[in-house]
Image 1: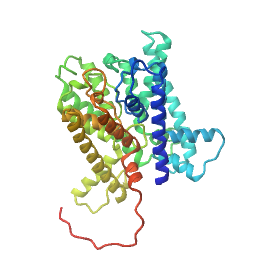
Image 2: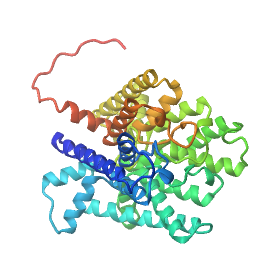
Image 3: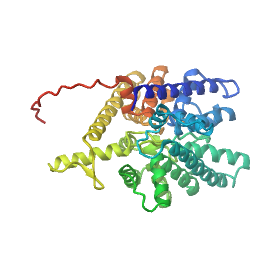
Image 4: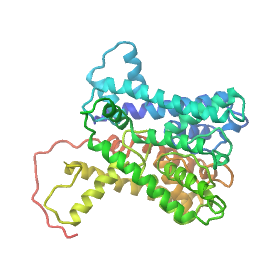
Length: 443
């Protein structure tokens, strides 16, 4: 990881965000009044593939404005540097070492597979998956709306779902489809594929085409962790919301199962909702912050501290408590102390950031602690779910300029990644050839 490369990547995100905000400010991009702060917030939310909204997408933005949001989601999900790299590849330009490193850092890529070939596969898989998803959703929407409108709705929601953004061109998001299996299951699968990470998708392709190819430990942990989180989330929210009249209480068994699946998927990675999240119990809100904090796979369109980070720390903790003479290991592979230290640092810093931001917003915006914590974690982990402002907008709509600025900063940090952002700010310590004697510390 190179600090100069990270600066370029971070600045590129800022440039995209500001260009997006300027485009949304154009008279033919929005309907009615739009402040620059709200345009900047919307652009950041789309570029950081979050989904928090302070303006109603289908009512406050024209088709052009919605198209800008779609482009920002796609650029934010795939990565600006990846798009630049693909452009160079199309121009038949070989990448030098510096350009390859920028592309790797942009995608959080650490495999030995060729980066140029990897990026080509990323775009091919993105095109294939989004085309299939758009096809299913367009076919479903076409049953009750004109084809042109159905096609646009299908494309927009597919891009938003695969890039884990959560924006919707329906006023109430997907609440109107709470009993629609085709829509919720298709969107759910797109979110899952996007949340696995490009390395996982590429390795799964290699495994399907090359029998001798061995999946990496990263891919195995991500796949197993994703399944565990989805199933445990379903069970947890079914238990907590089964009789809640504001959420699952009036639903049939089929609807409860479908919506608990959709809720479990979205709470980790995306901002879609098929029920009124403002009616969730405090227990559900608190548990959901844990799922949001975990997030999806490393190098994916999802946010959070990542499945592998949590898995590493859990494995290391169990091994420590057992007082084993073996190094922490998983799938017959040892986990290095460096990875364990980084995982601990990421979780500690993430916890401090969310606590500090929550306290600041509670005191300055005069909102309830639980709802504010939910909003902060959602922004920081680029999830995009919200208890709402009493209507269809996010709780952030109630915040003043200072409060919205805090949320914007949280989304940018979350998209960059805690370790990358911390390294960007603090830099790398110079190598020292001094080792101090160990000190005795009681725990």
